[in-house]
Length: 126
Image (tube, rainbow, N blue to C red):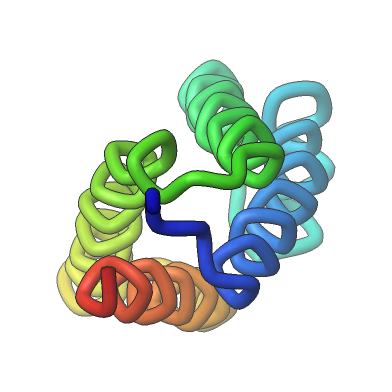
């Protein structure tokens, strides 16, 4: 019998999708407003639009994975999410430490870190 996707992983995919749509659409469509609310300046709005597009792409992969039932069909999505979230944490920590990012970016570290932990947990249990 093929392995089923754990319920907790399905919930993680769904939460990731929702958050990616909210933040990704904001960065893609209204980067100046979103960055202003976060205490940053969108000096290059196209960079934030690109990040928004990436977030929407990763969110879409989570939505597609959420709709699956078998582990083998979502394994690669989990692997990519682990890489994406860990690199995101490292990039944000670098920016906070050496580039003077606003303190609000600690929120990004916490969100990405929580997803990194969740995806790594479910991957290690598979």
